[in-house]
Image (cartoon, rainbow, N blue to C red; front, top):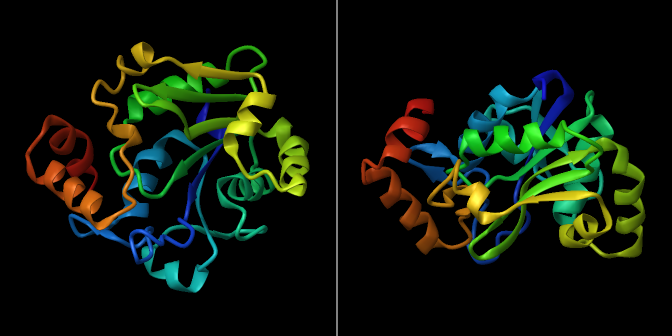
Length: 213
């Protein structure tokens, strides 16, 4: 799929109760988490936004900001905001706390989304369905609006109601054998684990992350 047809959207992170601080600005190897994610996504899309409920706090991140039009509605609300401003046909949606996204996996998902009449493309890892990252066709905007109005904020519900392609674990492994694209930081312990992964000198950290710093 051509980058000009895709809008990237990084979700700014909600209340972060378990982490105890703002996720988007949490430093990892000296860079905010949201910047790690945006750096991976930006080459694949025409525009990449950080969708935030705290625009003043996030100005210092240096990322294009989009204030969430329906705050407090989680990932589904962020998806609606992204779709309403998208200039292309699809939204690539990601959380801000997944710094180890693999570009190859995202590219494979975008390629799948550009084929046939799919509404969404997501993955299944060894631990189950992974609603994020996901690629969503903007033609389901009205469906997203209807679901938000119903009060059901689960992306899983949307995916079940759409023509969704779920990449199975064996296909995911072709692009991300360690499933690190789904490693997200919700606690201080997970933040420390992410720092260890980077400091370990692993191929992932050395070739795909630290070069983007």
